[in-house]
Length: 336
Image (cartoon, rainbow, N blue to C red; front, side):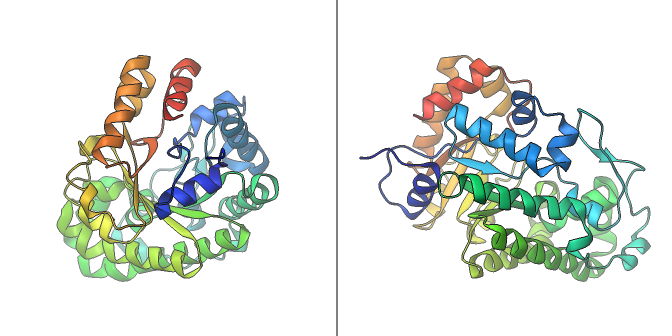
């Protein structure tokens, strides 16, 4: 078989077609910035800096994708939250959560994308990826899911209390976040994304009942919108999602990420439809960052066996920036 490019390899793998090897999609953000010697502020705010870092990592380590991931603040900033961007550290809210009470949710309006710097920089990132590496690497855009956006605006603790105190009122609010995600997705697909990832990390913290009633319907709507645009869809929920893993698979995303905290993928692998795959689920800290070569090799092999071969090689979440070049190279080499 000929040596495939990352885009071709990934699409064929998802379709269940023969590939030369499984795709390699590690989630790297701080690692990519540090490797390319890009200050993290620039990595978040300057599309040329992020694209340079991501392409350099893909070229040097043999990755199969490039992504726009850096931090979960783009949508929150569009809704009015002030974000602090230190020179070379993670961004954070400048004055804490935007919403100090639930009453503040009444003032939220659908953002005008052209006036939102962070969101438009993401579109420009995809445009630059398409011009420079389109057809070579699998270009993955990104949006935040409804619970992730609300948690950013309200704070995790108050957001969780609101699930109990304001469940009915949250339905139209979450729909607002879904509509914003859909308009953001449309622009990213028009810019040239091959896939759109949906990150909804806080959804793992609210229990299966709230997830199914309040969050899952919006995630399904987002997946359908991505597919209607002719694009592939990826769902990423950090944490132990074992109780909602069947729901995540049933939502219809082409790629379903599995965090290492879920444990074995074996119970869930039979639920995958013919054109669905997992991505994960190596422990990014104890295996990828701290493990030796044999431990990394064993973890990748175990994931492949648990998923019956239907898994893209990745850690369960972001590989830490502190990971050594040696360990990251081992992780990438073991896929090949």
